[in-house]
Length: 315
Image 1: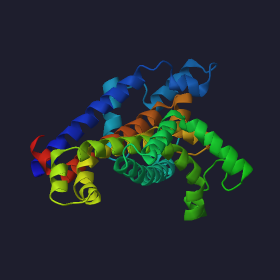
Image 2: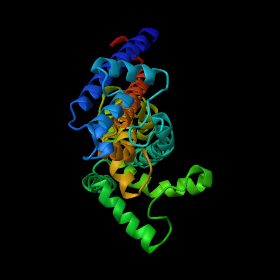
Image 3: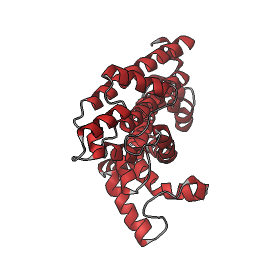
């Protein structure tokens, strides 16, 4: 197990190194001058030169890359070009919106998908199976932003159970903050739950057709006992993969939902920073999101080894 863990750690480090280079170089080729954007088209050349020097834009590409990576390793993400605020503070404020939203949505998605997928697989071909698969197909087909706007219309405008947008903040109380995240979390969770339920059903059906399940049934186990005692654990590997990918998507890809509900999260921060040509913020947030994706994948690999010890010797 230790050897497997060390191999995955080396892979994680290399992935982060390559990702940092790609992100930095990709943003370097983006046209436009942040200093000119900040000062406007009528700015004097000497003023532009002074601002470029202050922001470190006159340094070589290598110097700026080393400074950026070195700063991140010590927790210093630099200072925003636009807001003149430490990027770490901006990320910290927005992370307390995006991270709880992602966890909330993933919890809802898993709580819906697991029973639905298992129920459909245990009743293959029945009306229950057809109904669950029909609902999940609809969930996959409907865009989450359209569903988000529909929920705002029904639950915020007509029923007035929730606010139409905004975030009260954790200082307003736990339940008030969670309530303001409920509609966005549901809008994010339902399409993901549909995908996860279909994967759960498919994986479980494949496992139920294996020889060891037939052997367990031949020894006297009921269908229910074989499903819960043997099939479910073996069916979890592809499901864990989807859960890991979904958490990464929910954390990094919620920009549309955050804009629909006016949530001050990381996705909206990236959108605003791109519009303002605030490259240091974009680089840092994107790198943080990539780090989250890679760490989640690493955690999924560790979960693989716990669910199926045979995988430890294959990698």
